Image 1: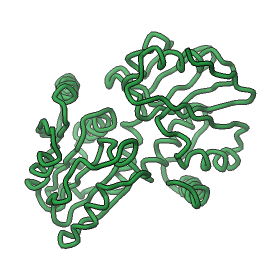
Image 2 (image 1 turned 90 degrees about the vertical axis):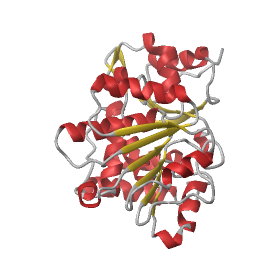
Image 3 (image 1 turned 120 degrees about the vertical axis):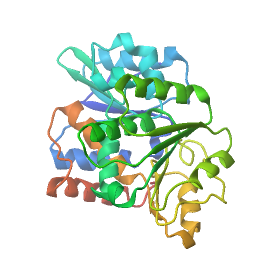
Length: 319
């Protein structure tokens, strides 16, 4: 059993795989000063697909330690929720729907678990793709990976479609293993997914290449696999046919980012490259707002100020 030291001042945790390499370790202190928070951040590193007992230990520690106020969860959000669901006193509707927790916070004596990715991924996509883009271009969205972040993005798109707002003409989801696609399909059936969707098992990068080669011009290709961050590599081969005038978006902002290097190499196709930095900003500010019960805008001068602070704090280290 792991031994976690009780916090001696208000503390927020980052539950991930290689947390010490993340820019948040430099960004959070700068944000805390700007937001007037007397708080610190601490990383908790767990191996990918760790034992359920380890996830339960972490959640129980945060729940029972008075000055441990909450956490952001990255790679482990699905496994942690499944292992420790009963330790949460309350969970948000999206956490129940998606079977994941990316934000842990406290309300009095109650431990809350929330799935924040539908909000943060949606805000990030809005920053990359202007309103009206999908209708103007007829473009599609190729999601490489069917994990929690990809599923959350489809939930955001579903809600836009239900509201009559601009969405891709089609969403194509690929994954190495069929069971993740089956889980996504089950959620989509449950909500009556309002965007045309195709699901493809892609055990090798060449299978993803084939799907990329079928996309309409202007389409968006998303690396939602985690490859290029926690593990090296890319879901595509170096010969991948990115859509002309399209966008390559990697959810990662640090690591070898091979996917983005592949997109840049497709110079003849005029592919715009976007990393996960904006996703990083939205993801963290949404959870920080929950943990410390403060209002942090998602746009405008205050958001721009926090973004600039983060960029400045991150310079000179691993990003």
